Image 1: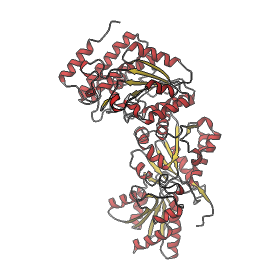
Image 2: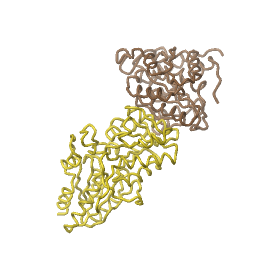
Image 3: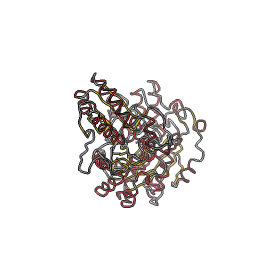
Image 4: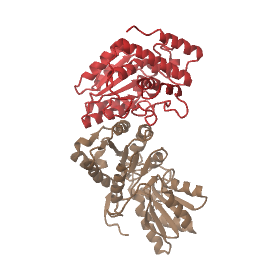
Length: 312
Length: 280
């Protein structure tokens, strides 16, 4: 697969939220003074009566959104992943998840994509944090088109949803006709020797690794596990039953995210081998995005090497 | 339909409410009597004077909203909701018990009439702001009432919410601060002095009333004025109150923040409250 087009997934959010807002006046954006970076500029300009900005006050932002949701609104709280998960975490838990309100937390700058900003702005804990809160749905789309589809699906689903996008450009993998269902993995290619389960900006690495493995006579199934909660347990179980060897790849701490979720299924099944590739439980630094991934072994080369080791 | 009770009728309603508060905390042997009693006059005036709610249709979209930001004093709101007919009176005896709609802190998923779950301090006001904002966006005329603890204003999120209320001109938001000057670990002055609390709310753009929050006449007057002033400013009624108000041995005692009365104390409390009805 050649990746000839690159778009940050935050742009997919910015485009889709305008469409959603035009279709339903109850769809609101609640910004916290980083709307420009999170691509809500078009929404602000085109739908000013559905646009709110509460300033640099994330905790309040979450509470205001919850109050709006009790009145039939569908508020999208928009900020960076680090702040949308940690700064407002307890407010989202108490005021959105516990009452099961229709609040969407839509965050740019997921994982190490805010590379030059350094560790303060990189978010390697967020999906794990939200995965552990009841009623929450946790999603990271892989590309522009899947972002548009999953943002729409999140708006149409009742209840709290956490969505995480990339700051940096990532390849366009899908076309606009590909369908996405929350909680259902997309199988990008099939194989019989190893399964590579990835999400977000690492799906492209999984695809490239599968191509590399194929050149070496190893066939890989690649799953885009865009939703880590609810996890597509059936798809993971099929990988365990039909293949037995699984590599997980994520731009997130190897603890509590996609890798952990897959390991939980394998452990309870009592079979299947899993190797997690992701951020190695360490803070980042200001550095190029690809370098940060490399420092943690989140590379095509490492996926290939780990796959070969795993299948012996 | 709003109720139209006289101030004396409201005073008697408030005595009923306080007796229900003491009764349910006694039955549960758990809960927060002190703050539930200090906020009782405001609660009573809201439900039997200021607010338009429909117990038969708790989610009626044009209803006035109530957000108990100091969620631990929910016995006061539970008593009001039961007395209004949102659920049967005997449900009050299930407070804090397994399977009850009356959770230790209010849950909108469990209890009819609770507009949003609260209990983690500092968060309710932002939710009330969201509700008031929704009314403005939809061109609706309902008001949103919210009761805050004095100690709760230690939380930074309260002031973030005040900024938002000011920015969006939420004159349909009426905040009550239950200034009983006691928080869990001691007096407010000792734990975190509040300073010029009325001045702080004024600086955030609120119209402010300073009243005796346990004087029904003053509470009603402040609420009437706050509801009438549609001038773009959010409202704050700062009620100087007595924690444990109405039960002599609980009054101004930091120890009665979160303790239930024993048999003897229960009897004395109910006897004292029985003596507080006025002639109508």
